[in-house]
Image (cartoon, one colour):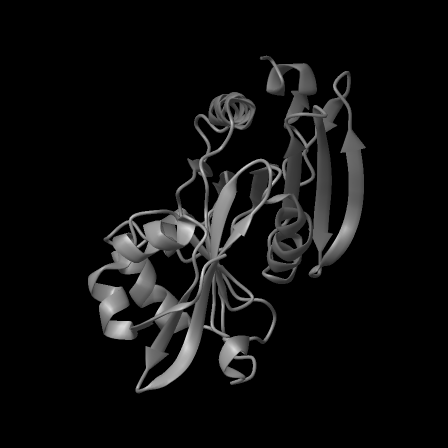
Length: 248
């Protein structure tokens, strides 16, 4: 990685796309605010894909560990062209998914859409922001799950189409670059945020990890393989053949 480049917060806001491209090319940027280094922006790279993580800490300046505020995330995300999530005080840029990922998402969406026909609950596809407040924490997480079922849209979608409710079922299709975060951080967020059920869909191994939540804890945990039929925890009349999910 090349030598750090230092810019002001104003420069970053005016030329966000330019600097995101610069960092994605394996460079690093230190962002200053009121003359002090406050944010280090650096790439996270593996052999499969690239994604960006914006962290409000700059060890090169020895200023200690700080978190990006929710207000700062809202300001940055309102100007960003890509998909951003905010988890545990960190801004995470989403990358383009694989074809296997997208086929699994599409198959599940179709199954859920058919199941919910005539019902009050609705299924949504990413990008669709979900703001999750974990227990008594004041700072929320903002997550864009691959799919979700919401049964409170009448009450919690405003006149601009923004959702502020709690999903009943959340589904993430795993990717190599997001696997750990989906299986740990997001699991924790959805459990403590009051969701009823969470699926982790593995499009390579062709299996589904199912979590059912009760009183903000794990009530059931199941692993379904390709020849199995999944019974939904939140909607017990919903049964899905995994062969239909992984039909690609």
